[in-house]
Each structure stands twice: as structure tokens, then as C-alpha cells.
Image 1: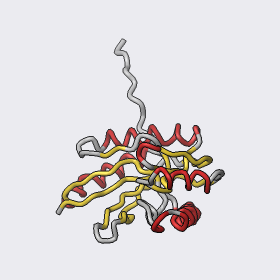
Image 2: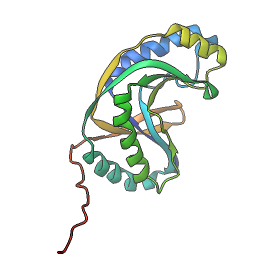
Image 3: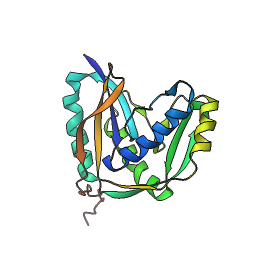
Length: 188
């Protein structure tokens, strides 16, 4: 059976504070609901739909690539939006972005045999598919933010079509074992 999965950066440390922001926005918008209002805080790397039997080929790849990454501190320090997509989010610092992007690209490359929906810009969504009015409400409601967490793993999540939410299936810790760079040697 085909299922939808996502690979994300995730930290329990920020789930509570971000849920408070989402709940506040939910209380201020029309109908007290919007896309991703109940989603736990995360930074998406990619999403894909495959037959669940194929998952056995994905997990070892995620485990192997994660072993190469080294934990790092993440700082989320501003709010912003992608107005054309109706997305309001918490943005990462330039330093955090410089850590995230190479990891995201390596994971995209590792999973290139799948049809991926890739995220290229690391961000933590507060709301998706917001109307222009709700984007304005969010931008007036939230003006300053300062969250930190240690990024020390990537997480595989599965989409529950009944609850319409992703849930954590598996975590792949960073092993701080970078692959050695291949250096062309000389015979003479």
C-alpha cells in the first residue's frame, strides 16, 4: 500500500513553544483553523510517496548518511512568509542555514531514486495555505522570536490519512563520522 513519508529536522525542545504560537494564531483566524495548525514543529527536508514495502530500502540510506553529520546549534530568530504560498514561518539564522542546506542537499541526493518533494529553504512553518488576511494577522501577532535547539538527528515521519498529520516513525542520530574526502594520488 502506498503511503506518504517525510524526512525532517525535529526537536522536542521547540514543539511546545511553537504549539503555543500556532494555538494563538488559531484563536485569531477565521474558523479557528488553518493548514498545519496541528502539525508538530519541524523543518522539512523532503516528502515522498512510496509503497510501504520500499521503506526497507530507505531507512538504511538515512542511517548511513546521518552517521556522517555532526550535531550543531540551531537558532531561529525571525518571522517571515512566502506570500504566494500563504506560508508564515520562523526563519533560521544565516549560520544555521549554512549548516542545514548542505545536509538537505546530501539527503536529497541520497534519496534521488524516489520522486521527492524537496524543501530547499530551511524554515519552521507556523501556518500554510493562509489567506492574505490571515498572513497579515500572523505578521502583526508575531514580531520577535528567539528559539534554539541542538540539531543532532533527522527524523522519518509517516502521514496518517485519518488524522491528516504526520507522526514520527524513526530517528537517525548524527554520528559525527564524516566520510573522508577522496584525494587523487600520484604514482610517482
